[in-house]
Length: 394
Figure 1: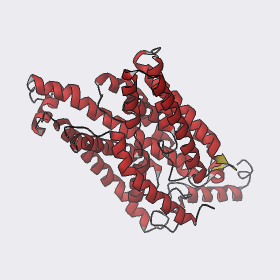
Figure 2: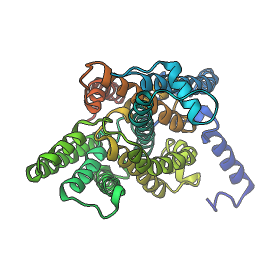
Figure 3: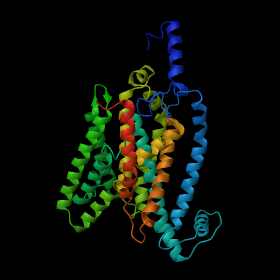
Figure 4: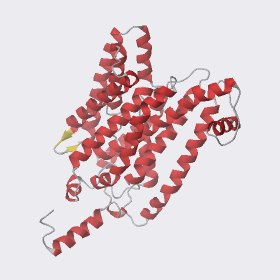
């Protein structure tokens, strides 16, 4: 860097290259296999496609916000004890001092002690998983990275299940969350170290490592099941299937700090992730400390994933599907993709939770099972699509 700046000609060359490679210039964005080849429909390299994709960010954000608000209100009023939408709005207005009126005792209890904690928890968990998926794909530079696919969710679940079976209470209500964070962090660092070869992370190695780690985590959970009593077995089953049925305000407050910290920190790394998409060497030449960036974002991903798993159990594929849908709609720029994935994840999980409790009413489908049924075919399609674009894995 200092050698290039010694002469005016070199400085001009460097400035020209930075302007061409900067994320501000959509024609310079390199997708590195994560977002499609330069000739693919997903690539924003052409001058004609760039303005169209920039203009979709605002309507997409507005549409996602409107969908989230509508789904939250619908979810709050739908269930075995139905509450009309007008009554839901009136009760919320009354609680925040904007008019409205209180409902009868039963309706108020159902709305504020059962429904709304569940809605808020679905928003927090979905936003955490969606944001974590977008960060994972940017950090590893491939479209198949997702906390559940590469074993982070399973590792975090092992930490949480271990805390339940061993009866750990050293941090009170925070014990399970801290153990889940530790399990997720150890898992993601292990997968990252084992997947990296020759200075880069390969897609196939990443997936195979994730499969191995997930299998090992499943074995540990099975071992805990062997030593658990009946009450603990029911709790472990909750982790394995994934559900928001046990949502309460204390659980919301327990996960809220972790989720808010992760969601607040992630967007500040958007520009450096765009530079990393150009390749490691160009990113280093442009001043990005690649290894430090990856370690920092891995910690953020572990924090977000652990926060989600600590209250919902294993819910997979949200972090895989949501970023891809938004990337196909608006391009690969992380300045929209990261917050958009958080918002899209909140929409997806709120809708999924509503479907889980209404499709087979009065029974309730496990949320993790439902997301896996929808996300698995998408993952299979994405795997074949990536393989076809790269001309095979060999």
